[in-house]
Amino acid sequence: MSSEVEIPAELRALMAEIGPKWASNTAGHVRMMAEAYTPLLARCPKAGVAVRRERAYGTHPRQVLDVYCPEQCADAPVVVFVHGGAFVDGEKDRTPEFYANICYWFARNGIVAVNMEYRSAPEAQYPAGTEDVRAACRWVVEHAASLGARPDRLFVFGHSAGAAHAASYAYGAPGAEGGPPVAGLIVISGRVRADNRPDNPNAKKVEAYYGSDAAKFEERSAVHYADAKVPTFIAIAQYENPLLDLYCLELAHKLAAQQGRAPRFMQLQGHNHTSIVAHLNTAETELGRALVAFVRDPN
Image 1: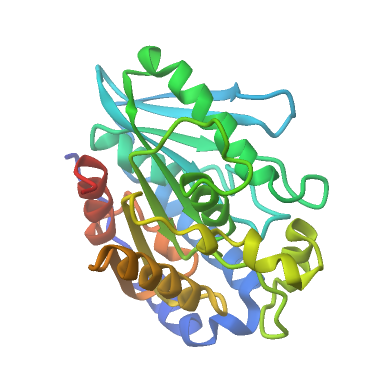
Image 2: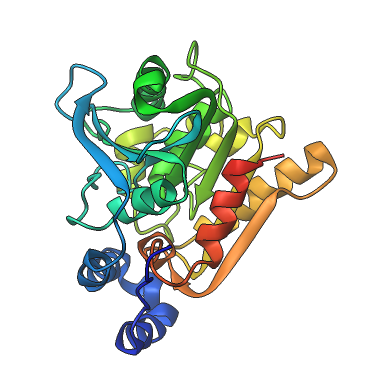
C-alpha cells in the first residue's frame, strides 16, 4: 500500500487527556475528536478508489448513500456502513473526511464499501433505522453487478446507534423482513440495548427513537435478537460512552452461549468512542486489518 499517515503525538496526547473523562461530556468530546482527526484523514491515502456519491436508495431526502469501489474490482465483498448519532443526530458526512475514512480503508483493501444515510428520530421512529438498512441492502444487491460486488458477500457494519440498526437488521428484528441475508455483522461501540437509565447521557435521544415505554425496550433492543448463525465481529474502545461497552459484552456473551465459543472481539486500548472508527485508514492498522480479515473469512 501507499505510504500510511501516522497519528501524531499531539493527537495521541489529546486522546490520553480526554479518555478518562470521556463520559463527562460525550457530545463535546465526540465533536473534539471528529475535528481533530479531520485534517489527519485528509492526508490519508485515497488512490485507487472510485467514489459514487449521493445515490438514492429510497424516496426520503436522507435515503441516500455513497459507494467506494476499488478500481477494476469484480466479485468483491461489500460492506454497508451505518453511522452513529444517538438516533437523532449524525450524518454520513460527519466531516468531509470522517466516516469516509472507513470506506476508503475497505476499498483500498479490495472491498466495496457503502456509506449510508438514514432517517432520524423523532421524525422516524423504531423500526425505521432497521427498515432503512434493509432498503440500502436491497439497493446494493440490485446494483451489485455494476459495483463489482458479490451480493452473497454482503456485510453490515454499525457504529454506536448505527450498530443498533445494523444488528437489528442482521439478526432479523422487526423491520428486517424480506431483506437480503448478510454474510456477517460488524458492531463497534454499539448501542445494542435500548435504555433510558439516569446514567445514560443520551436517554432522551433513545426515547425519541424507541419511545418512552421502558416495558418495550427489551423487545426493541438489537441484543434481544442476537443470533450466532450470523458471524459477528465486536469491538469497543477503552473509553466508551456510558454503558456501551457493557452492552457489547452482553452481546458477545449471548453469542458465545449460543455457539459454545466467543465471537471475534477486540478492545482498543488508548482509544475512545469516536477515535475507534476515526483512526481507520491511518498507519495504525490493528483494527483495520482485523476487519478486513473478518470480511474475507467471517467463519
